[in-house]
Image (cartoon, rainbow, N blue to C red; front, side, top):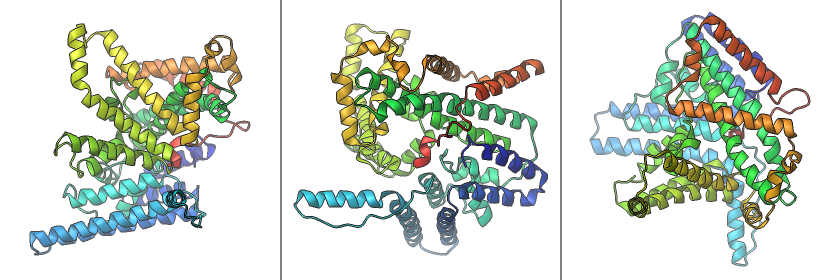
Length: 498
């Protein structure tokens, strides 16, 4: 069930209405049933995978809690807990590997043997990737690690824990919540709060604007150019790549914002997943502000256990590269995804290694790092680096990405930027101009966010007539300019495939 579908616009108000009518002791059962129904709308059978992951990690928490209460030597207790953690990770990652990576792994094995002139006839498994499996698997595994580290107590109530794993607003594309935050909130029944509902609705409206008005409109242009990159060569691809950076931001941030707003109406606070990332002054800063829940997950549960920055610079750089290579693989079973992750890791390592050289250049050239021009140059440079890496993310494969890059650098047709040729790529001149205006609105909103100006709170502080004008204008803008309806296929969110 997509957020940008009529089904959800019926489903969600019904869930909220019944939730606030029901007595406190049964509210969580209603949310649990609604969450499983929400997921089963894609494929009912795959709800069993969520249940299996839930049972495994729930049992692992109880077993580790059991070990804490036993009169065992500390070494025996720690060994037992490590065994439980290893079993939980092996089982959950094994399920994830089968559904997401089995054919990719077999293909790599076959190609490796082919290079040695050995032909293998390996099977191809007919498996459908369950939507959101990477997200709920990582969320469940974070609970296992938190219990192991004694950061939380094991949840005794199975239904409360099952709701934590399957909570529908953030089930299929995050944010990847931590048990320390979400479990406690879901354990407390809530009464209706008008201010929370109003703030949540404003968040949802902004999310719908990002997805329906902006991301899906940009997608028409990007899909047309990348779908026929031989015909749309050179500067067509440059523009499409720049727009894809905005598309994926609006698409994923739009989902996260709708999810956060929906949870807010139920009086659950989800973690912020995006913080104006394209205003970052470095790639490292970008990754502190992009998909924050996943970046922090890898930091806490992979980078730090690998040693972090505690074992010297070489190990620090190696650990960073490993984390970003794994992050690329998490996003998809393709070499191009691994290259995308590795490229972002390389940017950060190179940035740190070259820092003394950059400091020396600043001193020799008498540059002012606090000046507006210097900051803008860093923001622009960061965007160019990140946007270049998106080519490997968007392309259908590594070879296609290389062909696109070659075309961008070898085909000289800058006139297409001025002669109206861009209006032949799926968007006419009116839609292209509307898209440009919406991108400027997004840039203004992100600038306000960086200045700690929360626009929705500014709106909520106005007189009632001003507030209602804003509400009506926002709804009308989405209805008039959004891409939906019988002549338009509601586009799935990009991150659903992960």
